Image (tube, rainbow, N blue to C red):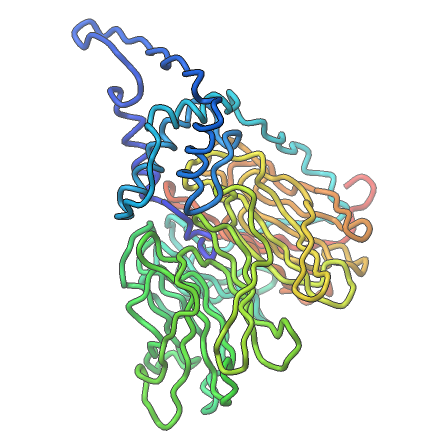
Length: 512
């Protein structure tokens, strides 16, 4: 969204779902309004044709033309009529007429015949006292106090505290600490804050922050997204790096064409008809903001949510790694030729189109000297269903842009991960947060202890109905160990805090 909270069909989907569930006529009900007697209509019998090879081929060809054909086991049987209706709607809205859709009723029955009655989910961990490290929670107040509905999309650690972006309020803030108590101050407000990064714009050496302005909390196709540069002197005006974009989810700085000037990579999540992966190249020669950047699109696909800048091939220039969700659900490398011309290579492609990619981090998880990828998939905002395939994955760097998939753990609704040595034993662990849209108590904050190379043990820190879309690590009390910060996400209730710090208090002692 967001960083992590920018996913497909978002709040709009919530509204549609609410309207649909409230419309009895559209949900298979029949009754006499005067007598107020209602009964559930049985589903139509499933035609034996759904097992015919020709029908299987026709359904897979139609439903798998733009993306991998959906796996029938990824939704319970009772949801497939709705999902098929949405799929046909997407095709009709696309303006395409080159496919030959099978009969809609036959497609519904095709999936219903192969779907389970319910989805088998791993049970939550109720015991929150197994962690070998003790953590203590302290809530982060809003700047100026008060209450609001938090929708924290991004946290970024810096040497003395944390930066925070909240979508609903548009606040871009800075969190510092006084005697271990968080203190928040507002830096600026923008039209839906998505992401913040410290940056120095060369060659002039301007210091400040790159800010992703999303333009809307819910999913829309619009051009209100922008990338802004706020000088560290808050009295100076903002610069517009790029505007007339979609819902911008991530921004990263780097010199992509080797001219000594700082450029900006932009993950424009968009929605259906907007979005893309862009590079804003800085123009030299005295051009004044906001005309000093020229934007070029290097990937027109919507759904880009996370970016990392690295020299992936060791040739001395900066490449990119990007996470795409929506129907793509891929991790892609963009290899730079040194002049900001990129070729693509897919590093990971999910096996199902509703995989729910939600975050991507880079770290040398196995300690072999190269950076691996830590991928989470737990987005449920398109269907509001937790899925058995949600979880945390390790993509092991094998060299030569070859990454091997390893499952760390299944976790419903997992939305973000941060990597660091939480227990001080010299290897890297993973902290993860989750968001389930208040369906039931779950484990919104856990950490995975690396007990040996590539082997992890889950420790739940909470069993509650908290909702977190982002997570960050840092030693903010400067005691030599890593603390955890999570952002709160509650679209319904005004809270006196926007997130929480989990102070690392060292090893758990006997009797704790």
